[in-house]
Length: 355
Ligand SMILES: Nc1nc2c(c(=O)[nH]1)N[C@H]1C(S)=C(S)[C@@H](COP(=O)(O)O)O[C@H]1N2
Ligand SMILES: [Mo]
Image (tube, rainbow, N blue to C red):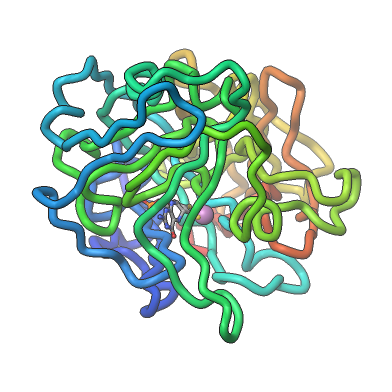
């Protein structure tokens, strides 16, 4: 008999806040190779701007030889590529921290597996001609709002020029093979694979090439590690930290369960995933599916000869090729960023309860 004990598959995003709209991917949706577009998590700081593509252009200005204003149709004539990647919010797992830091209280679903199609940022920067003194590119979204009483801020972030010019940093107009939806940044968004989602500026309107290091609300006031053990104070939030999730447990034969999950990391690849059901005293290697792709996902499984009936807290721990490993206990920091602590599921030989 092949009974399935996955948590009930929800076909809806899990709303975390209504205004602005923020919603998580239901974890079982991550069992699919690519997260269905309508289940890709949404992270908005402000009300979503509704842009008319006929009135929209991408402006490229600042420290360039020839400022440009590029229409959507002209952009789409540039060489394009499709990248499959793990998009994760830096606040994913914030709710597990103790005490829960201020900010959107994400569970574990502020992550999705998506395919973005677009043109490398380098193509439009080359059209404008980057000056020799340039050090950064600053990306301006069309949305803005009040971040403190009386203080309005637009969503603006920068990248060091070498990251902006990486062939995998793209300006995307499609997600999962379909035109971007408004929630995900229509008509154009940045995609910075390997970096937490805040770098992937949505509703992009302008790129300003700069001779200076940019500072701003979403650059060095927000999205910095503060008061975190072992991290320099004020370090900018950048690459995704190695992480794993447990997605499903299925009885495959009498007394045996197949546990499956995913793991990912922002730099390098996932090298091992281990599981434990005795509070981390003993770790057992999970089997990795195929080889992992850059910025991509490593699926894993573990065939578990479980003691019938008993209930266990099952956890997984991933290590990446740079030697980073998930911490056993959640590492707290003031902004609640980059929590890559362990995800746990209550599993019994006769079933599985969602956490
Ligand atoms: N303009 C703009 N871009 C933005 C944001 C935003 O609020 N405004 N949120 C960022 C954050 S924090 C994340 S995690 C990702 C989320 O992208 P998604 O909503 O398509 O999942 O978008 C990023 N880009
Ligand atoms: Mo985010």
